[in-house]
Image 1: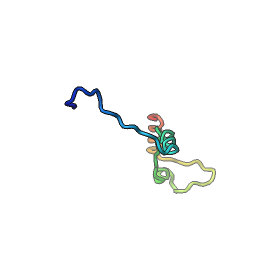
Image 2 (image 1 turned 135 degrees about the vertical axis):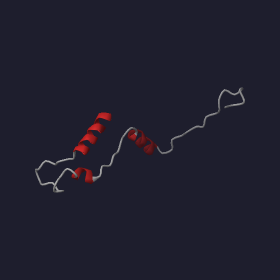
Image 3 (image 1 turned 60 degrees about the vertical axis):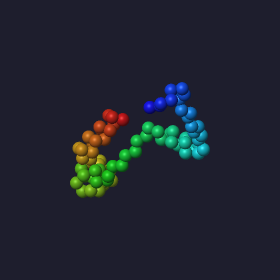
Image 4 (image 1 turned 90 degrees about the vertical axis):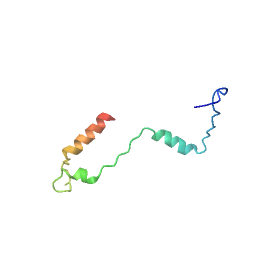
Length: 74
């Protein structure tokens, strides 16, 4: 709370961008979401642990539910 009522506001500092490539990369990355999912989560639904060529992968119900929830939220 200010005690001096005569000044309307504090002087603001001046921010100057000095590293434009980093600043632009930050603007591009704004709003992006990165997630890491452990490989054990993928292999928990697969009985053998390795996938044969041409065979469809089997994922656990918990992993499918988690990814569908993320899709719905984002």
